[in-house]
Each structure stands twice: as C-alpha cells, then as structure tokens.
Image (tube, rainbow, N blue to C red; front, side, top):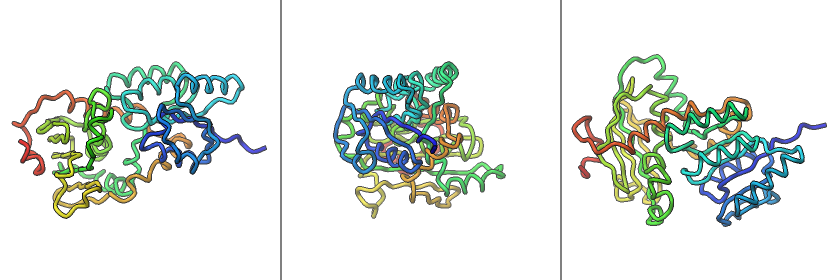
Length: 314
C-alpha cells in the first residue's frame, strides 16, 4: 500500500502569492484539500487543484477542517497567505486544528507575538514554519559562505524599488496597522538576509519614512548598511523598466546580483519543511525585531551616512 499523500489547506487563497504556494504543494507531491478566501477571483486554482474545496467564509472552512479531523483524515499542513495582520490568528488556528503552519512573511507584525506562538507550539506539539525564501537563493548562500570566515566590517548599499500603483495605498497593504508599513511589506526579506550575512544589529536609524518610501542606516556586527526601499516609480534609476522591480546590493562597491530566481523558491521552502529542515519562529525573530524598530523610530538624521537615493527627500 502506498503512503498517504501529505494533505494541505490554504488560507488566503486569492492573494498575490497564493499561486506560488499551490505550485509548491504540487511540486512536493501534496494534496490541497481546501482553500479559503473572502475573495473569489481564484481561477488559477484550475491549474493546480480544481477539485479542492473552496470556502469564502472562514466558519465553513473551519467546519470542513473539523470534519476531516473527526474522520481521522486530518490536514497535515496549513498554508497561510492572508493579509499580514491576520497571520498570528491564522497560525494559532492551524496549530489548534492539529496542523503545522507554513506562513508567508512576515510571520507576525510584532516581536512579542513570537513568544506566544512558541508557547502554543509546545502546547499543541505542532510546528510553525516561515517562508523566508531568500535564504535559499543560491547566490545568497554562496555569498554567506564567502563571508563566513571574514572579520572585516563591510560597507553595504541596499536598494529595492518595486513600483506600485494607486491601489496599493487603498488596500490593506497601505494601512500600516495591517501591513506593518513598507519596511515590513517589501523589505523584511532583505533585513533577514542582512542579519544572515552580517550578524546582529547594533544600530538602527531611520532617515526617511513616508507612504512611498523608507530609508535608513544600520550597523551590524560585520557591516555598515545604507538601505532604501520605495514603491514610487519616479525613484527608479534612469533607464530602468518602468514596471519592473529594481534590486541592487553593493558590497564594498562590488555589485551583488541575485535578481534571477527571486520569486521561484517557494517549492524549495516546502521541500525543506517536508524534510524537517524548515525555518521556524526563532529564525523569523531578527527581521521582525528590525522592522518593528523601524516602524517605531522617529526620524533621526544625525547618525549614519544617508543612502544616495534618500538625500533628495531629507
């Protein structure tokens, strides 16, 4: 008799990143039993799991999961791709329903919520996994290995400009209380990467912070970093494609290229989870602490050299 497929459910199935999760579930040989989202523009499900149950109301989704448990056919993993401010609640539901949670970044908005999740892991015996796929990017792994033996304090410029239209500020993403602000929404992967490469943060200064951009300076154990994040297409360097993200990391004036494959790593994340190597609550802590500090800081322009892109806004 063949082993039973690992089963999955997905909360937030109509979201932008949901297709990557469905593809990842397919790639690891899993079976998506149920998906939930109050929005129903999810025709892409036909590509992956046309027979999966779909629910617009959380209550009906919850009832279906309960029925699976009562039949002795529990959902093994629950993917969570709902709006950021709902992650904490949906992770807690997954654990209490007997499933391990695989959650998109940010795991939660506030660092103090992480302790509660770890306590619930102990109570339920289930695990929380976070999608920080940049850690699996081959170029980042290569750079981490290259820097591992170095004690030098490096100078780093990080720039990420990803144009967004007027819809962005009207959606939950434009509400800092729901998204955590730009540093969280578009930057948390990069702050996690900086921690991975250069160690703990000792200084975290914000130079510019408005609804379109956020920039600052931080010092880590082995790096001084000027960083700039923006959703304003007017910030794109001359010659850039107007509708494509611009990513740049300069390490001691050397360009680090990692654009290729940036969005294709979810299947690797899921494979690591299946093999017991997935990243958990503690791995998420450093980046959540960093963006929480950025969100709480008043503007401070008297410490750290500002990023060149930020100077025109000072």
